[in-house]
Length: 220
Image (cartoon, rainbow, N blue to C red; front, side):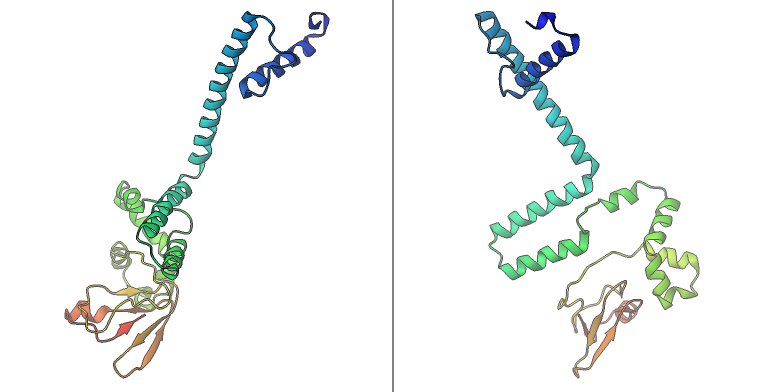
């Protein structure tokens, strides 16, 4: 009966039948009658289902590639969750680990060391100076320093995140690092229970680097 209908109606019915076969939801307007129709319908459904699966696969890969850094973070955090479950870590420790990852990576993960390592030295220095511009602006130590000295210092810095209550350094330990505070507040605790606060733009731990001695205070 469709032979006498318009081209638009014929193509609409053909498209409906093809989509029904591809999605495996039916036979179209009518079920196959003869054996030839049955085999053609099965072949059509197999080809359609294969094309549909390929379409879904390509679409999924495209969506994932649009935000690969977030996908990498999610995959990494799944491993962390499996690790915590395997070792049966307590709930408060799991929460602290979760908060650490949220603050450290903010939902995205990059291989920054590898990315910077592939760039030329001028580009690498330019990016480091840009990323650390707020730290340099708030740091009195860098205010009147030579730009080459500042750049040399920045290339040696390593970004670290500490949570409330974490001991950054402990009194009596050998000091091998000094710290610059980009954001946050730390407490310096001495033997006499005297507490001193340091905030953005401050630094600590430099004495042990110069004297190669032990820490004279704890910082958290």
